[in-house]
Every structure is written in structure tokens, then in C-alpha cells.
Image (cartoon, rainbow, N blue to C red; front, side, top):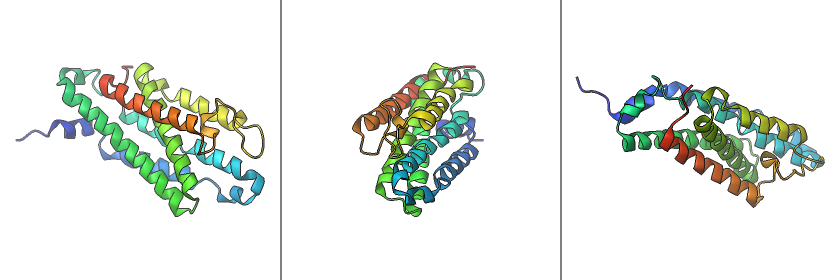
Length: 203
């Protein structure tokens, strides 16, 4: 009997299609559940966008379970470079799934191109931070930094009803804020590279 290829075995080791379905569902619910009514009040436009930006990081939590290597490091016995390629491809698949679902949901809801860019930026930041923490920290607590950032950004990241964000509240900045976009992209790229090279931490 012919054995499955390494990419197929890798995908199965990460749970196969169920975690992909869960991640897509979380992305759909997170963006689809933001109340549009908030945007109908002029002074609340910024606050509504802040809500949308913070909600967009939720799928990153759903990805965590499929990032952990099974079998207590058995994968370290496999060829290094093909395994790096599999890890990188898996993260890219998760990223495309999250960004595609959130962007499509935002578009279908008629929230406009700025909102689409906002959810893409927030999703990249969330995925990047979770990937980095999954490598540096134990996967069991890798969700905590992103959860704290989202919570604190929501509670005290803005200073008025127009949604003016404090410098550290990256999830609350308007879509055209370049530093926030650079940080989000940098976190995601760093997370992808580090995860592909080192995998999630054991434990």
C-alpha cells in the first residue's frame, strides 16, 4: 500500500479539514456579528470601526490548536527542509482562509473597502502575534498576549467617541495608519518565518 505524501501526513497531523472549518466559521462569525447599526451614528463611526478591528483577531485563537506538533517532537526526525515547507504552507493556508473569509464577509455586508482593509490588517496582526507566541511560549498560553491586547484596546485604547486611538492600541488605529499596518505585516511575516523554522514550543 502506498503511503501518503509528507504534505498529506502533515495536514492530517494538524487535524486535517476540521480546524480549517472551525477557523473559517470563527472568521465568519467574528466579522459578521459586528453591529452595523453603530455606524449609523456619526460620532460612533470610529468606535464601530474599532469594534470591527478588534473582532477580526478572533480567528487567530481558532488556529492555535492546529499549530501544535503531535507526538512530542516526532516531527524532528523528519527531513528538515520539506518539514519547513509544510509548516509554512499550512500557515499560508490558514492565513488565506482567514483573510478571504473576513474580507468576503465584510464586502457582503456592504461595509466598504476601508473596512475590508481594516479586518485584513487586524487579522494579520492577530495571526502574527499568535504564531510568535506559539513558538516562544507554550501553546497553552500563546493566546494570552493577543487576548490582553484586544481587551485593553477595547477598554481603553481610544480617547473619544471619534475613535482616536492611543499609540500602543494597534487594533484601534484607523485603516490608513501606516505604522500600524507595518507592525501588523511585520508581526505576521516574522511569525510565519519563525514558526516554519522552529514549530510551536513543546508543552
